[in-house]
Each structure stands twice: as C-alpha cells, then as structure tokens.
Image (cartoon, rainbow, N blue to C red; front, side, top):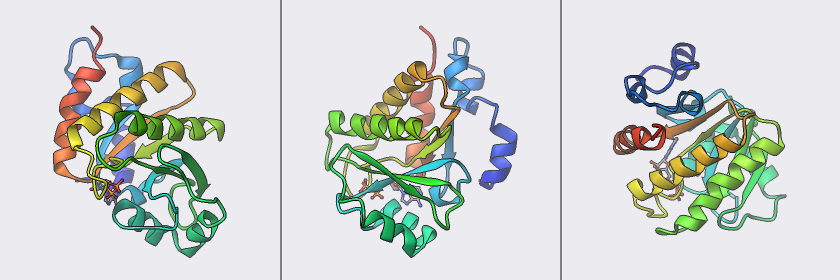
Length: 197
Ligand code: ADP
C-alpha cells in the first residue's frame, strides 16, 4: 500500500483503477471519486468524516483514532456542540490532524438505509457550506454499529453520486476503506454506480 502523498501525486486526476478500462464509465463523476485503503487520520485534505457517537466525546474505532491523532483540543471543541443526532453532521477544526476539518456524523445502529443516507448527505452539505472541496468518508456504521458492509456501501455510493451530480464545486470524495473486505466491495460496486447506462 503506497502512502497517501504518493498515492495522491499519482492518482489525483485519475479515475479509480477498476473503472479505467470500463467502456461506458461516467468520466466526469468518476474522476471525482477515490478509493483508498488506509488510516483516515493520515489524509491531508479539506475534511475527514468521523463516524462518531451522539455524545461527540469520543469512542472506539475510527472515532478513537481521530481523537487520538487530533489531540485533546478536538474533544474540547466537540464538548461545545451539544451532541449530534443520528444522521446529523457537525464540523470542527482538525487540530493536529493533517486534514483541516473534521465533520462528525452519527450513523444508525443496524441496517437503517434512510438514516445512513442522511449521514452522507448532511456531511457533504456541511462541507459545501464551508466551501470545502475534498472530503474522505470512513465506512460509517459498519464497525461497532453493525450495519452490513455491502448494503452500507450501496448507500454510500448512491448518495455520493447523486450529490456530485448536483454539486459541481466538490472536487473529490475519497472512500477511506480500512478493511480489505470493504475495498473489494467498493471496487465491485464502483463499476455499477459510475458506469453510464
Ligand atoms: P461505527 O460505530 O459507525 O460502526 P466504527 O469506527 O466502529 O464506527 O467503524 C466504522 C469503519 O471505520 C469500519 O469499517 C472500521 O474498520 C473503520 N475504521 C476503524 N479505524 C479506522 C481508521 N483509523 N481509518 C479509517 N477507517 C477506520
């Protein structure tokens, strides 16, 4: 696995490998999508999304990793936000992270597609409101919250696709896939969601 800066230099204007040789790929949108396997806290971009819990005061999984990497001031800012409901999204600074901002969203527990869709939509809307152009998502809800990986990936891809079609200012959405199983699922589903009929 290459490091993020190397990957970025090589791939920033490229469409994902799995789409390169696909005939009818939707190039405009596909160019704005990346899949990246690794730790979301290493990404030097405008915003990373945190799969937080309602308290916003830190937890396990990706939430714990983000708070550890950002340092204690992230928790201090989070404590001023009054928590976050399922499907909502709230923005903070990135503190010691290479990312400028963290967008905290709370995923549903279990398979609740409508709520998961809201997480992606509201995170992207918050990014847009703050004029951010590059954003990375972890696989929200698919860890401790137990949403099955494949149905979750379908919600993620369809929601992001719709947003990118409607909002031309977003330059890049990175799906940060920590697990090889998620990488495989996304590689397969990208063909379905980013190919023209
Ligand atoms: P949730 O409570 O929403 O299920 P989790 O943090 O338990 O959140 O899991 C969400 C996803 O984040 C899982 O796919 C997990 O493997 C992944 N993950 C865990 N640590 C990291 C990390 N440092 N960077 C990116 N993804 C991560």
